Image (cartoon, rainbow, N blue to C red; front, side):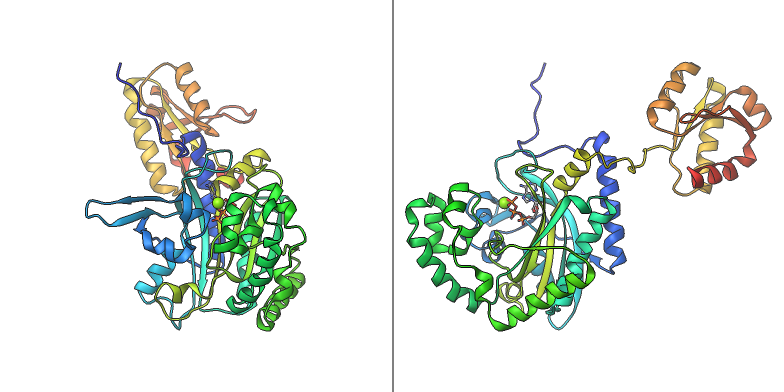
Length: 427
Ligand code: ATP
Ligand code: MG
């Protein structure tokens, strides 16, 4: 037998048993973004390597060690997108969507990072995200956070996630803070790990973001960025906090939250949960007012977030919050005997014409009553139509209720649309 080829490590298949849940999650997300008037943007999965180097930053986990970068046949350096903010800005600049305009955009799709695969961390994973442009006040920061909070409400996990909030200030304020931080870190250099020592020189803020417990301990007393904000950033942050207070959105100010990508300024936030173990961040975002210019456009403020869909799905499964995921089939149409196969196919087609959205599975492959009913049950359908020669002769259908204790019924074929419409409006 030929050797089977396996999927790439850290890249998962989404099998039929799971895809219903994924579709349900995606559908809910689409409804929520639509309810805020956001529009979808779709960008290619592959971009020039330079795009990510220039935006995410050379001294970040992503660019240093996680990107899938390769040369194509022309010798150009290409990269599978590790995130989608850079691509959105690239597309926005390229098509003139950003300067002097307001945009509220969303995207959903696969991202690629060469990380060590583990629960909640994969090499191909999926993000849903929003990006807004042309709005620099704290009101849009609040809206972006409200939109994420609405999703937790829709999925019933509001009490499972906590909002962490910080401000990175302006790049000038950050520069003078950096000097303070570097002095502090130099005094403790022996307690830092190799990565942090290197970052001390190249990107000291990122030391605050270290996941190494030993480093975290060493930097406990570090000067706090939020106490060194420039006046305007401070006002922006205070106004955002006040809005969130007024709107009843709870948050915790975390002065060590700096985010792993270089393009952020002012507001940064993460939604974290205890229900996933180590991979506790389900959504992360912030403001990136300098990014559009950094990528060759004219100065345009931006703010957005990205949500890890695998982590969201894992949460829903861990907390058993999947009962609203619809079954793939509503109605299963059997046909007892070769001669009624056409009757079954015909009724099914008619129902698909007349009841949009009804999911009808028509039995194929013959077999006796028992076999067909077994299939009907396995399909997840609530109702089976039982069609035999008598039913066809009388232009009737027999209805068996698969999920409730209810007597079988027989109705006229002409009444099926009315019957099903009423039944599924209630069930
Ligand atoms: P982490 O600290 O967990 O590595 P990150 O800061 O690298 O996250 P972002 O770049 O901010 O993550 O991406 C936003 C969200 O995408 C994360 O909060 C997480 O939910 C999800 N995410 C990031 N990397 C992965 C991955 N390798 N596998 C699955 N989900 C991921
Ligand atoms: Mg990461």
